[in-house]
Image (tube, rainbow, N blue to C red; front, side, top):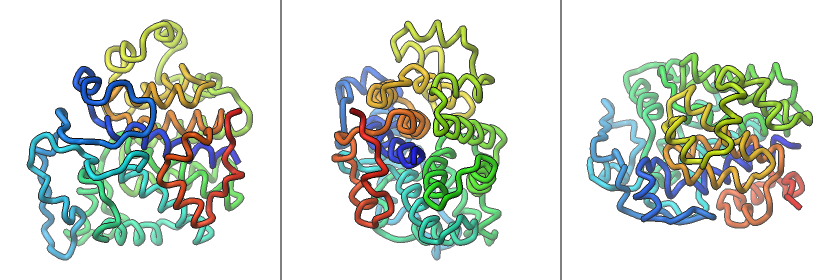
Length: 338
């Protein structure tokens, strides 16, 4: 069940990148953390944090998604994930885990039951310990507070965070015996559009589904990327970039930022470059900085599906305890690299 490996790979890549998430000054990142080689606890200050110029005030006191983290909004140098532990996942991937459990426990994917679960989780104090909440969550709940129906609360958003749930949803459907590509695409598109109503996000989600399905059926990573994502780059560029340091590609020739479709190009380059090396790929992704957590969903899922995830990464991943305790993801589903 290779899509289980894709899901676990996305969780590992997110947790590895978490302490250096949204570092765009790589000199500062190296000074603060050195070269990332495993799970690390984040710490303040974060020199690239934008929380100092962020604010969020809902028009209804009945809805609260910031909880005790509200006091840190408007302050300088606050780390986005300051209260997370080493090996812990960020908000979007915590939601991905909940989605995975929800679909399996329900026996199907249902838009309305998931939206109800999502709304309840985000308003539960203590459920999430992430200080930063992305714009698409904030705008969803802003629209909800204005009286819109949950299905109508999504926004025109083209950040790569919109792909965060794709591996989790595909893995959950695989557990239920749903693995034909057409049905997977249909469910993924329905889910992504709940929060991200943008043609780039939709197109990139389809590309990721296509690549993961190809890898699942035995296609090589590089072959799959070139077949299903050729519009994002040409083979000539890949050959040229492959001889350069990672930061000379992602950070110079390709953006390290979060905007699709360019952030997908950077993600797929790293998956192509490290096609047979899960650890090398997710560490390279972390160390180029930028929106590495959400790029990591793409990189980690593709490389996890193709190569498996070694036990060293599973041991330090907080979410594995939850997955194993709930008996949803059994260890036999995780393919170890020999």
